[in-house]
Image 1 (spheres, rainbow, N blue to C red):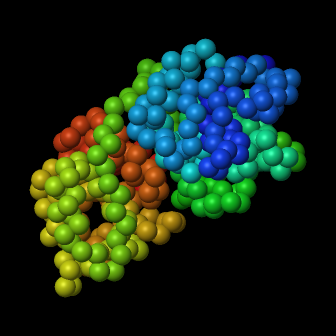
Image 2: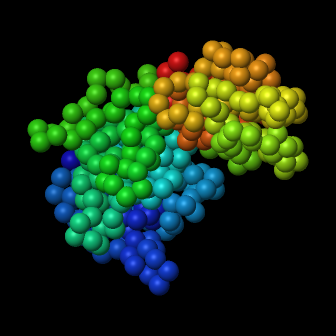
Amino acid sequence: MKKVLLLATGGTIASTQGPDGLEPQPAPSELLHALEEFRRWYQIDYRPILNLDSSNIQAEEWQLIARAVYQELSHYDGIVITHGTDTMAYTASMLSFMLQNLDKPVVLTGSQIPITSRLSDARSNLATALAAVEQDVYGVSIAFNHKLIRGCRAVKVRTMSFDAFESVNSPERGDILASGIRLAPEGAPLLQQGGTKLCDALCNDVFLLKLIPGTNPKIFDTLLNMQYKGVVLEAFGAGGLHFIRRDLSEKIKQLVDNGVAVVVCSQCLYEPSDCSIYEVGRRMLATGIIQSCDMTTEAAVTKLMWALGQTRELAEIRRIFATNYAGEISC
């Protein structure tokens, strides 16, 4: 029987109706009752460490969660984290970088409907998360709607549907069928010697900017004046920006010259960016930006925060972005 620690952080799964809408509760009786049912198959310890809507989970909470996982990892076969869905992909991605060389399952899950509702998807999502621990699916994953998704490849693509998350630019890690759990042949990245390491330093001074036609170049002056250390740009298509009338490339170069790490990803959800294809992309490459290739926006943002926590040297940040730590990049 697998020994599992469930770390609760709040979210819809633990919410009840309050005067101002759904509010998370630290230990709703329905959640505790569901865990009691699962104890037929698993040895489960329950520990609430946060009680937040995931919109309120930020850098400080990521560090708290990562430290709690690292502290308890040696005592359990795996850890399940219940979490709100809205920023779950960000948390899963950041944990993928903070918990280096992770050799046990760490599975995030939650629900679209509170567990107090008879229509809730909470129990099936918990069952999927526990099955991932049972099958030793090591590394960080999200368990949702009978699917297992690598933590640094998950994106929330639907606000209401049970099928809320998709695995972007990477196969799902597994799914649940009538015959049981089916795992994909592709495993996690090869483990290195030395065991799991906690690398939880990060920098919160990162800004995400989605370009639109006609973006005012002066926005980059503002980001520089606000002393941001990193900027992720969601560019057009394979990686382009406008330079006629409103030349963005000059201001981006100014950021880079002032030591700001600028990472470029595509506004398109699927397939990699490649700034070398078009003139509008090559102008951006010439500024010294870092390409994120086929990373999700969530992975690019959290990896940049994490990279800036390790170093402020742009050359080293470039090396970090070219390194595949947890399956977040494949090109």
